[in-house]
Image (cartoon, rainbow, N blue to C red; front, side, top):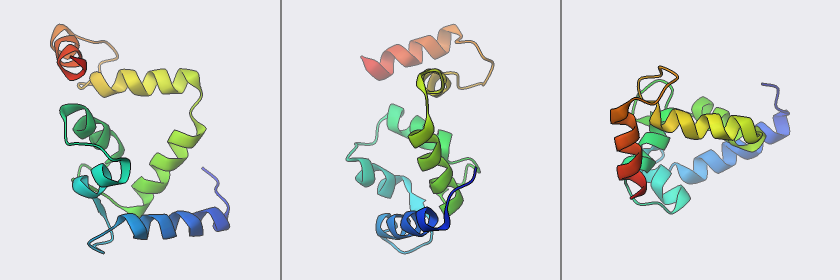
Length: 107
């Protein structure tokens, strides 16, 4: 991933604005506020996909990576991302339990 330093600077400013408690990390609560979302199973799963170190919060690197990924996704990548939201075990297939979970999320 190659990003111009001017873009990194803008992302750092955005990150600091989103980091309301000035912890240097974006918590799940701050993430929800950022997108105007309520805490649901779906929003929790979406957050967990970008929280690559499973710390329960996003550091600056995870934030930049998620913004980069979101902004550069083509259709196939977006479909893959949506699939990965529900392929919890990472098997590349949706098992019955994962499909049931998907239905519960959107019902």
